[in-house]
Image (cartoon, rainbow, N blue to C red; front, side):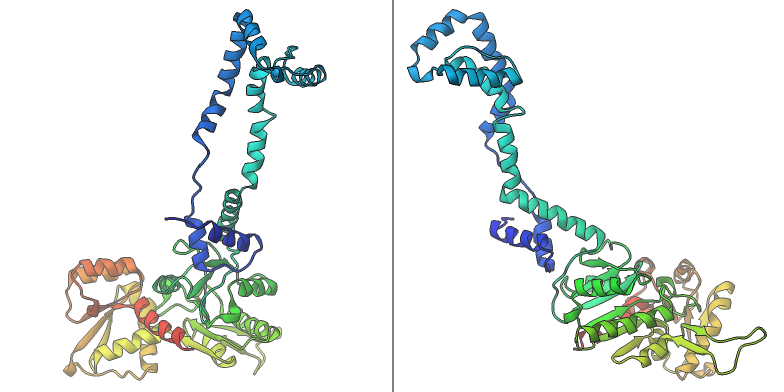
Length: 433
């Protein structure tokens, strides 16, 4: 690829002045590699400096008469004046041995040697190298790599882009970023994502100022929405009571602070989308020494947060999956299949949530739909290999198990891959402006 000098210098200036960078700027600069373009003869001369000076000195010493005759035949201007000779010999005395001859030919060994040593041309070359446009670009690229590494990029993204708050990482958030253009989303994370350079560091348990800084760097003035992924990857469906990475009370504070920052900056309130379980909650209540006081309990849940602030919507993966199951069942009896441990963990929650969506137990006249979900996805995968039961629909959370099931002969419409269901809804919500 041919790189434009002017473009590289423009991007370098942005980096050095900490101005906002587009993903295209970042890719362009990262793709550039410095190539040595020094003159080959200059390289050779540098490498031969010591041998040349030694050779000249050797010849002067071994064949002095020849060089004396040769020096006398040279034009008079090659002879140094006495004051100049004293000055040059003083210099040679400082860094080596004085020559004490006035013809310049006798000074060639020292000139060759020391011009490429601690004095002279070598030093000049080093200074010039540091001042060239190429070095400015390389310096800026190094600074850019450091900003990517520590998550401090100042970004300019497409208007309406998404800010993905993924904490320590989230598969659905990752897939959302991969499914969209680089200038359509920025990942806000506690560690550098492997799948993108377009990210910023943020820990939800740090200060209000940290949140302001990351929103500014991530271009929240022009964002379309903030998307939070508080539910744990391996508990997206039917999560336990504590199956979240970000607690409801902390998410409540973040939503409140985002609205405060928007108000301070006189920005229009942007949408907040939460991908998590509506029944995840924290409780706060007052108690005396003996008992809890009546009417003092305050419940903070994802559902209550979604109703508390303007322009907040909740995508509950469990509801999304169960709606899909009800659609597939089409009136059939729904049964749950898992190990004893899986049944103990999930069965009660499974039917309770189904019933909240309107499911009623039916007889077998219309048939049976079996849903597989277990503590370990490997156990669910094993059941797909056995193929003991007809109309067995496993609920799959991870890509690795999804790929394994497809290899085992299942078709896409014969199991439920939760991330894809959520991504379809999330992409539609994010596209709404």
